[in-house]
Image 1: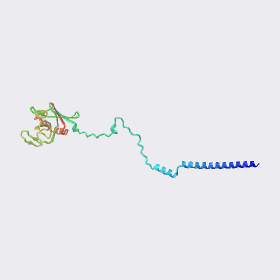
Image 2: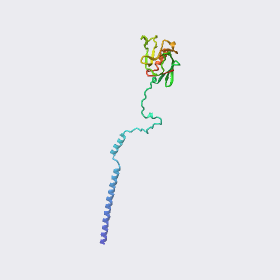
Image 3: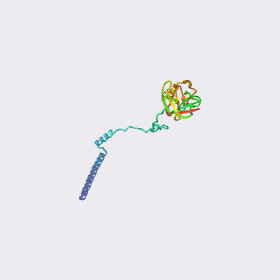
Image 4: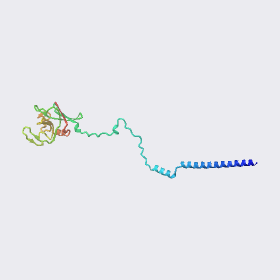
Length: 218
């Protein structure tokens, strides 16, 4: 009987120890769960700072996809060298046709104007060839090549109101000019120069410049 009581006491102590172990395990598990939950929940102050930092960052504009240049229009995206302005006078050339007694003003192979002229007479023929305007004078003074007399600008000046020289041999000069003798226009009457009605000489003067090509043909 005593041995049965002792055995029962031992079992009771064993059960009590097991209960203690289970209680400690439960307490440890509860602490572990609380720590895990605390690790998952962010600190409220840190969260506020992080949110404020995100809100304070400026938003970059949405530039979208880059536009590709369409074929055949690279000038829209590739810098181009500026083109020099076109000087209309540089596109002009004069063609004097001796047989027609007429001078033609060409601009890019198109006739822009033409004027009747008088050309050099026999023994003083106007030279043929390719030349350039080398001298331009408004209201020129004429010097008589035989006497040296100077004739000032005016209605009696043999050169009229405009002079455009295009040929020289170093001594004599030949050019387009007006004339006080309009009846000579259309003939061979000069000493090599090309006479024009004075109004036509003024008009031609505005269409050419020093360097303008002059082509003289038969």
